[in-house]
Length: 97
Image 1 (cartoon, helix red, strand yellow):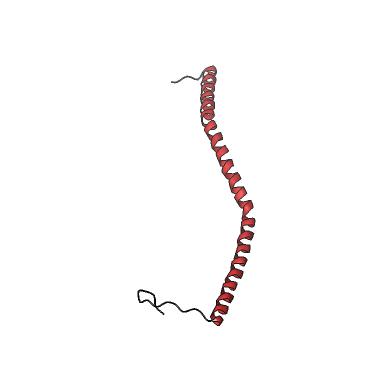
Image 2: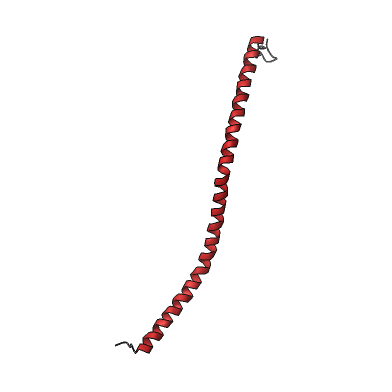
């Protein structure tokens, strides 16, 4: 059998070929169902890890904020300690020679 352009058309499959094809599709569906079970099991197992990673992400954000606050505080403390050191040096009578 040919179409209007002279190309041959595929023949219809025999009943045995249909049965074989249906069996093959059934095995694919079974394999897909098993694969979905494994995927869901993997998703359930990794859900806690994702929660931990999200928590760590939030912790790093908070630590970044603490670091932004700590920089000026450290500068103020070091300025105070340097001033205190100069005052103690002057009280002890240490002078430059």
